[in-house]
Image (cartoon, rainbow over all chains, first blue to last red; front, side, top):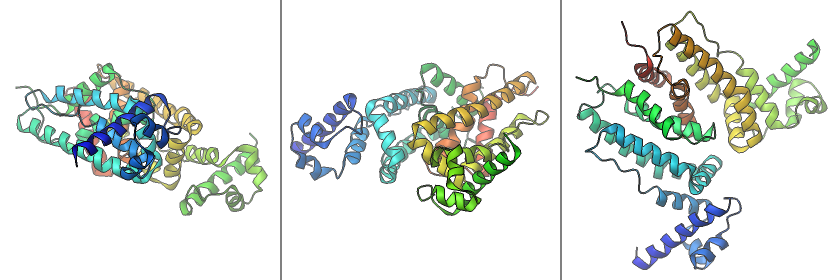
Length: 186
Length: 186
């Protein structure tokens, strides 16, 4: 991708995020995004077929950072940062819009699954395996179940209870999960 | 409620469940339910304002049983039965239709929350407290977080991963959670 094209794409995604901070997803229009980004509508339609796909891409751009694991820190600290970043992004206007589209639109749900969930899950799984290799976590742990214990309650609280997990909630969640999966202290 | 009226209501709810086993929610009509139940459409509209409310009530009738706690059994066995019942009902045609409506319709989501989730949550919380009182579970456990650890992954798997947790998954889930919250063996 040429530099100029990348810059233009990024500008459109940033304009989408800015528009969603003041407009609901349903009232968002491609015209308004184009005007905010200083491009023509046709430029947007060249890259995105519809509004839903544009919003998902803006979400993915936002979620690019904040989910790195630092192998030098205890796994619990890494997961705390991950869960706080996840709660924050899912609670932002772009995150809320994305969850709405994901529950309504099967095609977007599939993209969200492949481009966000699976990617992040694989990284988290490697980090958990590294923690097992370092003796921080019990080797008998079922990686998928352990990750569902960390992430499941966050999505559950947001999607079903419509509540955003706060620092205290995330702290208690981590303590309870780590009590179950941490290797016994020597 | 008079006996005859209760019988008629029950018949309509059962007809709704039967119809959803062979039709999608979107293709379900009040006419078809009325015909299946052998009543007039006006009888259905006397008790339910719309299709969504009818389906939610059919779900609540289905969920009336299968979620009892037996104070004489270990808390882990009780939760295993609960989680299996939950996965089974959410995976049934009436359960899937209900989750679809809940994600689309805020009013139904509120009723689902108040009439299903909160009711079951309170019962589960009492059972967990009883397990603490009996010395099965650590007193320091955060009841809400512990219950989210059990139920969150089930909803997460179904809503986000579109997978139904099987017996092995539920077994591993219980082991990991109980490892974290069970009182230390004497």
